Image (cartoon, rainbow, N blue to C red; front, side, top):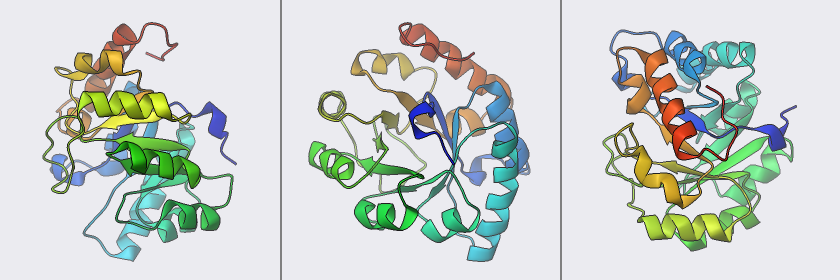
Length: 219
């Protein structure tokens, strides 16, 4: 059972194998975790259910070993099949209320939001955290909607669940999020797109600690 109150959203890795070239995903996830990633979301869009299931098992073996929660993107069936820590859904996926009913109360449920009304609805329907973005331009999602900083701060100030900023975040623009009060950042290319994945994760964690000194963050 996941201790949901103890989940650390500081450095949330979202996978995308297109950035890895010939590198193995499970090994890359391991490097990211060793560098400081605190949560992993497995996102696969163009694979069969069987391939997704097999890949999820391999990644979960890594996250379980390091006691890092594994979140499955979109696919409730895969999340249940591998007994993942949780599920993340977008605005065009299974409604949060339905996902929560099927998942039960003990699994983590994340919901993407770009507007305050979406964030409030997600919280009401049982979300444990919000992924808010895209806060910066991003090439990893064609349908990503822009979120201005004022909206991000408004969402953070209006909900009681953790808020994770996502979308185009890297070591150069991360300091711009300092005043938003977010609970973490979700990144893809800023870790998986780098040659040294472990160092990339470690560098982002150092910046997070510097920008959010009031929080006790791992290094």
